[in-house]
Amino acid sequence: MQPYAQSTVKKAVNLTANADLVARAKENKLNLSEIFEEAILLKLRAIQQQEWLDQNKDGIEAYNERIERSGIFASKFRRF
Image (cartoon, helix red, strand yellow):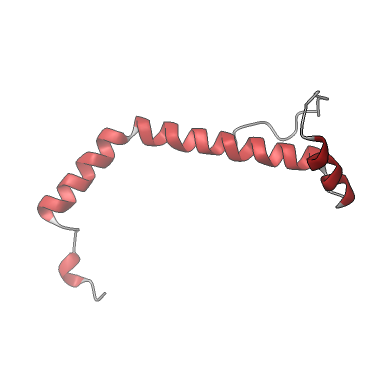
């Protein structure tokens, strides 16, 4: 699931950052807007992942306990 609507119009924002870092980014022709969006997207995905793990913690634990108790389905047929 995408954490945001990609087709939404761009919005100007005012940010502060280390001046030397910004200068080096410009020297290397980095697109700060693109990097900003990528960084926010990574953070949002990490939040979503943690939320999913939190919401499914009980089910994951129950599954792992069942596997420990009973083994993996059809494990006797595995060749690895």
